Length: 487
Image (cartoon, rainbow, N blue to C red):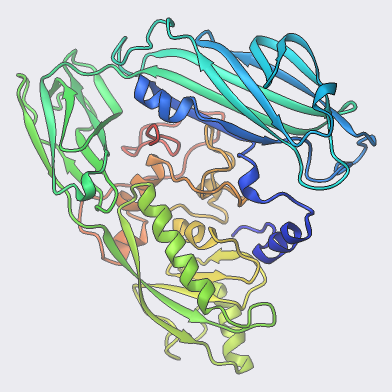
């Protein structure tokens, strides 16, 4: 269950000008591990970030002094960073800008070097849209390791960090953190290969690898990329390693998982992973009218489209297929049964309002944004839901449990941010499932994908993660935050 601001409240504030539309702002935190290659850096690391200047409302925080100007405290770290640039749009008086520390004014904005700096007198207009700033990194092309393949695979090359505190007087009213862990791509020598068959749309698939490498070390959760064939270096028989698997994640395809693939110690092995269509999960939509949601039909249609797009974009390999949609009876007894469905079926199945071994989504009759029941084939969506609420609740059904097993929510998981769909408390940024989450959707024995029967394949037990202060042990399931470098 997650309870935050509603779709219709957010829309009202945007229309009345009280908040900027979501497209104007990036997530407040952006944390990622990236393989250091020119292609990835061009697509990801060197992107521009648009940052709102100030908070959503002047004096929006307790104790903030009245002011028409802000100061920014900025810190840039990372030996690979040559500089960063800031450009501003919408300031009331751009000529009033001043800088201190490792910063210099230029005609188009501000150039920032590594270290600490301050940008002063960011003036706010009296009315209209809030100003925005564009932030872009510039890297040192002579930094060692810039070329793909330099160094051992996953060797840490650099940690790039940009932090910005927006100060209204002495009070911080907004914060932004950008952190990249740069690692070596470590292009494998030609040796063994994973060949992908029937890769729909020629997607750049993610290959997850456990096994014994050419140096007799146990590689755990190695990640490779490829469309037709993927070089994996030298992979030997399992030996003393705890696991030997090949998992393949690709858009429009079900996850493929090979346990104990036929590696041999000499070079030259070719392991074939045949990809099939995404697993179909039947979904039954039960529509209940309410004062706040008189016609839930269009909302349910859009939510299902959004959920399918998010699961496909993140290579989860699952398609939610609508089997039926029905209007719920409006008599008080039936409506009460549905509203309290998470406390027990209460005769819904005998009344023909529940389909066993399939997902059942009930709209409109609860006050929460969304809720996944103990019977995880039951999901309740309220009138205050976000467009990503259904995708979030389906994540619980696919073994990321909420409630007392709150490890299903990503807020307390190291290296996860509000961009994760299982995050609670900020809906605007949610668009991302990690590879560790997608693995659990498919392989965890507790996933309804396995318990309801759509998927046939190897299963594993993926218990909850331990407290955040302890290292995550290898449960033969990847860590929740394990991911691949986008795109």
